[in-house]
Length: 144
Image (cartoon, rainbow, N blue to C red; front, side, top):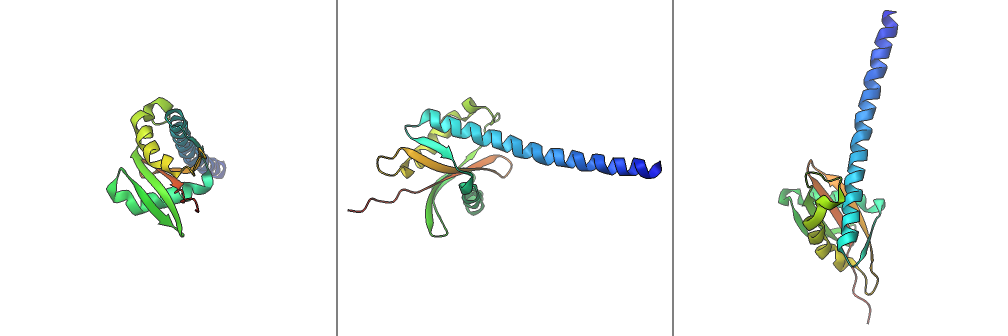
């Protein structure tokens, strides 16, 4: 009976740890979704979250985390990206809490729209404890 209790206690610890890990991922996903929805609400361009670009968003944070909230251009593997790093609002899972932060991010990211194309694929990553990094491939000038 003692061995059974120990085994059940160990199983409970594993389940609780797994639940905590998945809970964080779900929360981050809600934050990212709320930000993308607000970007689309305040912008003339259409933003689409492309998870393939999330690693680039993380790299933008890694290279600029000392600046906290910042924006600019970053080159990763010979590809140029516009990036924005913003502090999460207190209720980051709600779209309306992103207001001015989404507008400021849109000013930087909307320059990534290529010519008349009004669609931009972005990477969004919750980073640090309180920040979100967003990247979009920078638009290239059209050939003449």
